[in-house]
Amino acid sequence: MTGAAVTGITDAHHHVWDLGVRDQDWITGQDLAPIRRDFLLDDYPGQAAGVTATVVVQTVTVAAETPELLALAADSDLIAGVVGWTDLTAPDVADRIAALRDLPGGQKLAGLRHQVQSEPDPRWLLRPGVLRGLAAVAAAGLVYDLVITAGQLGAAAEVAAALPDLVFVLDHLGKPRIAAGTLEPWAAGLRRLAALPNTVAKVSGLVTEADWHRWRLADLRPFTDIALEAFGPGRLMYGSDWPVCTLAASYQEVLAAAQDLTGALSSAERDAVFSGTAARTYRLP
Image 1 (tube, rainbow, N blue to C red):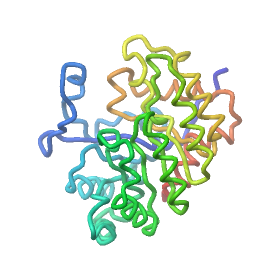
Image 2: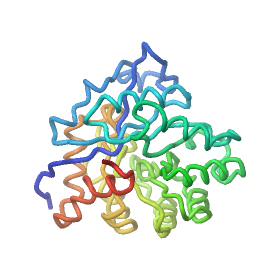
Image 3: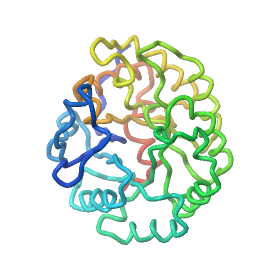
């Protein structure tokens, strides 16, 4: 079933970068070569597709990036929130968060994240220093985005259970192995995380977990169906993951896929996925 097009969309996950300002050292190799160029806010194609608000998300673990994203948001009516980065293990992490909020655009700081997917320790989130940092994130009234692999879902569930006052937002549904068509153990891990009330997930980044060149809607549906069952539409939000998504699909194709995959939902449920959940979770203006 294909639902009617959704308008007034909040894109809860996109990026921008300017290689003249800072290298994106993760963009390496021939496969990623198409996105090894500048992607600026003026290039963002979501508004033409009905997006009226966005959340821009960090890309590198460099402290200077978050002030730059906040400054960009301060001058933008489109960017409603920023998910940035700061060193969670720093002894003065609470002061660092407060300093970010005092910067131009600081009122749009909605959350923080770290590239946990790249940490060799599968239980990095449960380290004492990280737990102290996450407690400071909660005390500041921010949320924490989980950028993890499917194999790290268990640790994510443990940390979410340990910190019930902090809302955890799972990016990209925890990166299931869509190209391989493998549901387990991802599905069990996702359900374990979703069983905790302080967790939310993004329907984002799925086309790049599928076969970039031959993906079909049917490849994605088993994974989104499980997410809808586990979280419910009231705890799911749409994100494009632009421009990374362009490795596999255009912005319009990503949005159309998300709309098709949620086509059986009621109008109110679709409104939650495409705007309400993000607005509530990130406390967007």
